[in-house]
Amino acid sequence: MITIEVTQKVLAPAEQVNQVLLDHLQLGRFFNAKFKLIKIQNKGELIGGKGAIRQISIGKIVFEEEIISATNEHICYRIVGNWPVSDHQGDIQLTSFDVDNQTTQLDYVIKFNGPKWLPAFLLKFFVASDISKAMKKLAEHFADRHISVENIA
View (tube, helix red, strand yellow):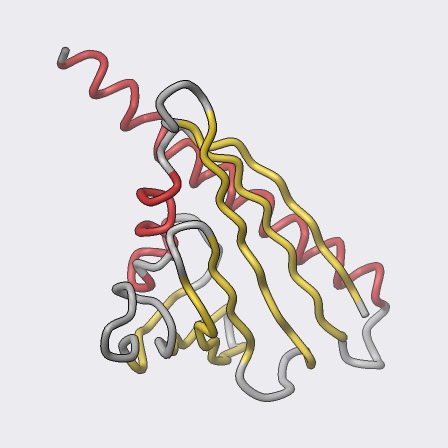
């Protein structure tokens, strides 16, 4: 089992970070992939939350992810099926802190099994690198918005 853990500080409340992460059609601005919404969330769930299914295209690799659960503080998803990796689950924990809860610590944990023909250390390196870059872009997205709001005030 491969485990990847990424922690990122984001200058925004957890609820706002959550809304951006559940805006499936806009995730391509952070991740090196294209996203398509296949199914919307179940009735009564957060927008983009539980029950939503997104299709991800990374070059010629195409697969689907399903949101298993979503609250303002936590998102859990899995790859549907056993390709390109198996037993995949991603958990994103969002913890607000600071005086006014205006900063969020994002803890992203992914667990999966890779194909037997691909060395685990290599797969872990590429996936961890991609996730780390995406979370930095997410943080920059909110930092840019934070700076823009300060310039207006």
